[in-house]
Length: 286
Ligand SMILES: [Zn+2]
Image (cartoon, rainbow, N blue to C red; front, side):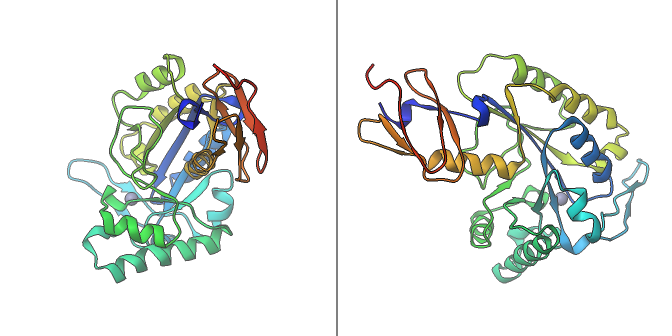
């Protein structure tokens, strides 16, 4: 027996995790956060510190004006208290096109200033415009980030292989949104799954479709086999799973992290590996 034969379960022996990710810290986040809080779902809100408090109206040809004014610095901590705040670059620049010093400034100033507002280290980042390269990933790691989201839809529920290439399942305007939600909740799965939806709060005003996100979160809410977690909580949990140490014959597992880890062994037994303890696996021979 070995680690490769075990499979990860989420906290509470759950097999599914649902998370959301919304960018730019626009005023529509107030309504969105209330919706998430009301339905007890969780997400990560990626903010540009340098644009907080700014008022801005945008108009695209042939479409009504949209108010994309940002939330205030003063309200960040309380507004997002049940959610997660992530970084999104100080001024929302395309970081791959900048020289290293300025790209690092955009990353680290944003992070340091947002951390002062929320009172804890930021874990997550979302690439402005979804653009990144190896340099940007390297700078994010040096700045202390644990992962970063792209804008590439996978239409799948696979767990991420690279935390700095977090491809979401889909955008909320994806025509397959509810079909994917249904498949996630009711389809057959052999491994634990992650459903990951992203977007911008102002898009609900722009497309006049707030009912779309309410339909999604009400449908997704309240399922016992689903873990509702922020992006950072999910990455921290996956990291704790990766850190598990196995004895040579696989019969003893040490969990060196401060997180309880749940798994299904190759003997089809469910194990709760308490933080900082050794667990003797119930069955040791096939
Ligand atoms: Zn953005």
